[in-house]
Image (cartoon, rainbow, N blue to C red; front, side, top):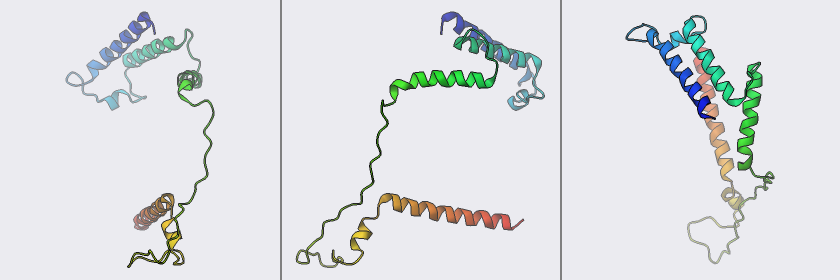
Length: 156
């Protein structure tokens, strides 16, 4: 962005603030929501915003954009150019999830009061992954919220 472009954008932004000032308290009685209602927006404020839009567009390219779609396409292209150096060259390969391997303990070294290592299902209980626990918690929360939602709408 050149200094001339920056100056045009700053002047247009000041024009927007100047156009908005007489409509807001203490002089006027409008709120920002009233001012930016598309059906009731004052003409001078709409003109000032259009001029600001043109000044900003000229920072990206000399000719005006024909549509919002064209504007978004150009902005996304510029964004991709800026972020391309930040992304890795090749996508990382996903590795397969592995279950936790728990070594079997002999009966001789067993701690009193704890279940035996050869107890059926013992390793399975210890090897439940964190993802499974999260999935259960999320589905439980979802069921609870869905029941509350249904009870709420049964009243109507």
